[in-house]
Picture 1: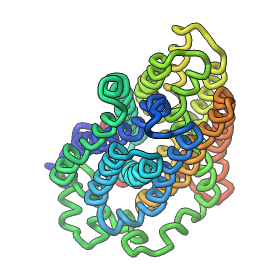
Picture 2: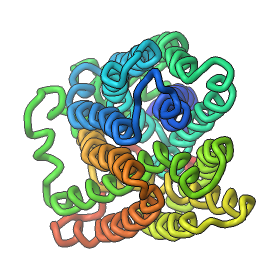
Picture 3: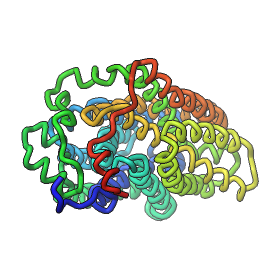
Picture 4: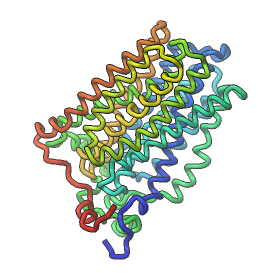
Length: 448
């Protein structure tokens, strides 16, 4: 690294983190508007939306996420992170406009599926970018900081549901979901750097070195270039089952399934479940705001703790605490105490899933990172499909409170799955995950 290059700290990579934060903020906003306005949509006779259909539409959204997340790793390795990220934002902005214009459930569901394609491709790209650019010894904290944006976006969506929807109707909230295309896309295309690893894989070595120098990173080596993805070969997936990862990969998928079942099940159905438990409409929607406040706090706590204790331990403990919180919410507690339980549950629930991503970064080497994260998030999206659908089935049968038990069970299974990842790596013949590029140099330089 040239002596004039900046030190590899959070300050040197702040522009990348800030741009990815903005993109994920808009994703969090657009994902959560559905749950924020669902009670009003169910009360709209002109739309003709029932609980079972609402749950199915929620699953269409996450089905789009699943499809996109499974293919996005090789696609971005081939075309580049930045242009595909801009297309992702465009997709969910257009999908939001389709929802705002829809008069029946079918086109509304099509709009949510289109938005899901954007949602599913955006998060793996942003995670991969942040993990590539962040100081290696602060990878978990960087991941947590990035994911605070999702929950700030969720809080913003809840605010829109509480302010715009009563005054202008639920469609106005979906029109607000068009803003990402107008704000984020120009900024991403103009300011976000391309991945040095992708540039190197394309033979643009000078550009790769220039980006690495600009952001204080070690220059990428050939082993860090995503050769599988740029070639578009099936070996991109087969690489996830190499020694050391072959048994850890399915456990990461299962943990991600449970985590995203919790994230999207709760995000879609918490207001309706709390309403079924006897709380008023305004209070029920406010719980969604409160749980996202807890989530933002939890990302800071989980990220700092995981950098010290390891993301596997933190994720397993957080899943267990989420299960306990879900069981407590089943009881009809005094309103103030319920708000406190919802906030504390939010601290554990969402960051348990994010630490699964941080654990995946320690399992897969840099060259396989985008594909590995894409499949961890993609397979996990099946949980995101099941969560909203299952919540709709329970609500339609008058058993909305059983959702709390379902979420508690998901937390227990997630804890077991992520907790077994280190054992699986040893059984699979794996050594400790290779340190990210430049980790030793940074340690010697005293970065951070």
